[in-house]
Image (tube, rainbow, N blue to C red; front, top):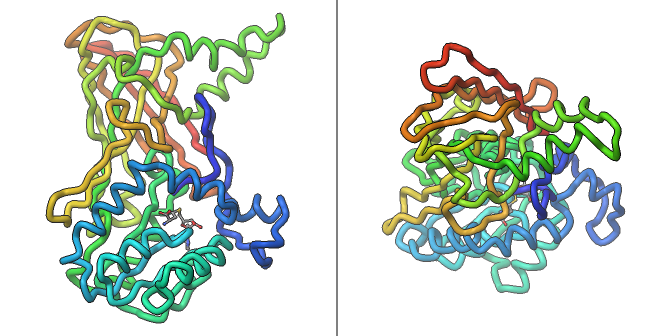
Amino acid sequence: MESAGPSTHHIAPDVSSTHHVTPDVQSDSMTSRDYYADSYAHFGIHEEMLKDSVRTGSYRAAIINNGHLFKGKTVLDVGCGTGILSMFAAKAGASHVVGIDMSNIIDQAQKIIEANGFKDTITLVKGKLEEAELPITQFDIIISEWMGYFLLYESMLDTVLLARDKYLKSGGLIFPDTARLLFAAIEDQDYKEEKINFWDNVYGFDYSCIKDIALREPLVDTVELKAVVTDPCVIKHINLLTATKEDLTFTAPFTLKATRDDYIHAFLAWFDIVFECTHKKVKFSTGPHAQYTHWKQTVFYTPSTIAITEGQEITGQLACSPNARNNRDLDITISYSVGDEAEKEVVEYKMS
Ligand code: SAH
């Protein structure tokens, strides 16, 4: 899942923290103000997600190619959007699918499931999962596409964990059931110049007050594999069958070993998703080595350039927590030191 976010180079995530407010209007009479409050109501955001073939194709493979898991089972689709995952589940043989979404896009989803002959197998519920009453109260399988930038931005995972605790039968399955957050460091001189150092001199004026703010805002963008100068390091492993909401506030240590002599201008994060419960494991990565996805990667510029030699290590930790005032935003603190240097740099980032 993703908010109406950036589609061009290095643009920070969209602020759509209000999307849980569903305007009390029909989707065919919505105005721009309604779309601001309910960004998922617009087809454009769903177009981007549906066209992300790594994303949608992986869900399709995981569901459709595992008919033996779905046959005769009840399925809950958390945040069903246009109903695509619900229809995959119905096609895979589910006895009944309930799709829930709080956005007005569900009005279109209803038409879509009817147009495709799934009226009797799929029931759609409009509302917030946390508040809704569902026609079935225990499900065999939960399916959901909840991932945001940096995996956890927009924190929809909370909703999926709540759905699990309330509605999943014991021994039930979750699609997907594993997520991993990865971390590395990159050489990014040219782009850092353009995005961060730009503020030092704007048409001859000193705009450097913005430089600090810009640095603290992680950038969502695609990064070429050749920019990566360290081995990757897993900083968080989430098993959706057992994770708790509290696990999503964490501090993780990392050690990044340089693979060549170079300069480091930023840290880089991405995530991998695995459908562990599938027979022939379906997985995908949003890393710089993998095919493009709309999640791209997330870049955290460092205040100063770090010179590194092959084999040398950067050690540190990343602390991540939902923002106290808006739990869909993330506060991310990265502290690190290079080699045996005693001096530690601490940088506080904010994804909002
Ligand atoms: N499953 C669809 C849409 C994914 S986008 C697909 O794969 O294409 C995530 C959807 O979850 C959005 O449509 C959003 O409105 C919905 N959503 C987010 N939080 C929700 C909540 N707490 N309750 C109900 N729906 C939610």
